[in-house]
Amino acid sequence: ICSKEENFLMTNLSSQSSVHPDSGAALPLIFRPPGNRFLQVVASLLPHSTVKPALFWQFLLQSYSAGFNFANRNSSSEQVMGLSISLKQLLLVTGTISYSTCAGALPQIFINRLGVRSPAVQTFFRSILPIPLSATLAFFNVFTVRSEESETGIQVFDHNGNPVGMSKAAGEKAVRETALSRAALFGMTAAVPNLLVLLMKRNSLLVAPFRHISTALVLGLMIPISFSLFPQLGTINREQLEEELQAAAVGRHLFYHRGL
Image 1 (spheres, rainbow, N blue to C red):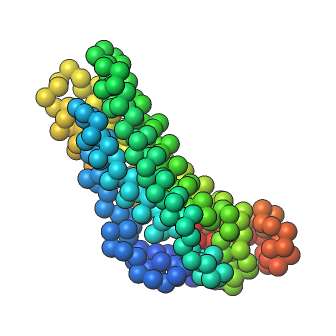
Image 2 (cartoon, helix red, strand yellow):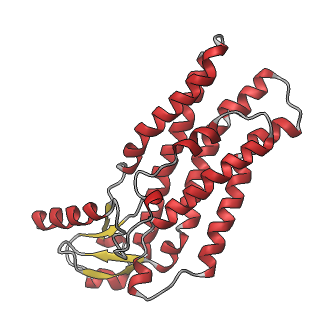
């Protein structure tokens, strides 16, 4: 059984870099792992002097994130049940981008609209608030863009790779795990450079280039780490499945494609 599980795992993982594991369609080059979001992430985390640049870079980042999450979702419900991309999904993607763009620019909006001049308050808005905000918005982006998986369910397999059925419980687990991994990616990418910059305040000439370089380095290190926090081929206990699937399941665990 173990060898069959390993073979099934390797077969699916080998296809995930360029081909969608559910549909078999080639993923758009820009949305293939690990993704090309360095410029957007670095620029969105930098302090801005006005609101417009903050909104612009947040829009690029959130649009790319929504596109990446949608392209790398689990689309087994569309393949098995013959469903097509719904208007609700498109509205969710559009709404997610709009909301996340505005929310991501809130620190700069607060500074400009409130006329903040205090160095301590500016430090809070520029270096502290972006840390939980970035993690929360990354979680929110995945959770909303891929919410369809929790509602319609995703395909689960036995240890031989045979389909057992569609499970909403597995869909919820897949979305939750992916959202947590993305929150870790963006939270750490925001946290490490900002906290290090706080320690370098006395040497202001080095702050700007150091922030750029450290953000890119941390992002590059965190991408593979965040992708590996949870296995791409997820497992779910038989007891966690719906009753009708428990009756049809063989073995203690079933498998599903988590997506990225």
